[in-house]
Length: 341
Image 1: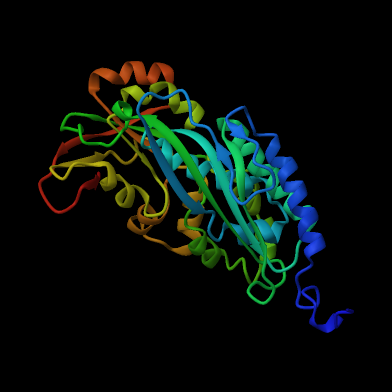
Image 2: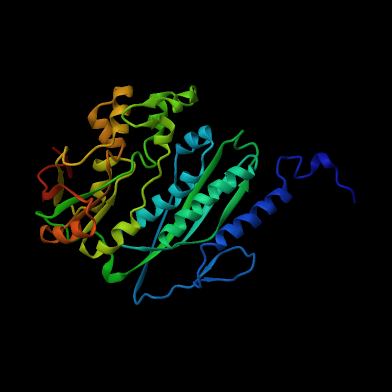
């Protein structure tokens, strides 16, 4: 029986042969991250991972995407960094519980397959996984013509890690007198890009991404695509010193710190005790944005904030020299759990 070509799946915008070839390349890329824990399961519907090396493992999971940073990457045609970002931002989230990343899955959907874009994106995902010893064991690649147009696509990730039950970092032991240690960010990371795009009107005027700013030493677009910093290799050796750990993403310091604090305490930050990268002052100046709004949208130079005892600070700083004392825990006296002084 000869099919009517106007009714074939290809005519509707989905080429199954192209998709099969793409998925074969994805499997080849993923195999680079596999150790003996990843079990062979054929080309099946789910990945297999054998958990070992833990006595009382607690599984820790997170899922997130890189947001509208995708728009900037698409306009500049650079995708490696957002592939790494996808892994990193999820790994950083489970790190706040003290977890070691085990395996990762991705979800990529688009209108038309672009082989070069997909390969550079996957290369970034693989680099991100290898940086933290995490296996890419599966995911989904979907072609959806009609839902996305042109070069638009969507990207999300999912990570699973594990931690011994007695080593879970949950913030419950945080008390007044504990010290706040900030770990510098590499810039915007993956948050606040909807505001950034509005400030610079980059959707309507993509040429602005090539604008040079003396404070940056390079183009705006290059700065916006600086990768979201990975904190796992840096902080893994000092997890035992922490009472709490906050990943400063969307919502900034005021939005993220309360998640790790007991209700009876507050975190008092000394603004000016850490360096704020120049990209933030550029955004504030160009957009005429208040300082309060800046701190509620962006990380403002702190990618992670750890809480530890005052006695533990020297050991922490010896292992992580770039850690900065940025404040302390105080008794809570009002509605606010975060004070920026």
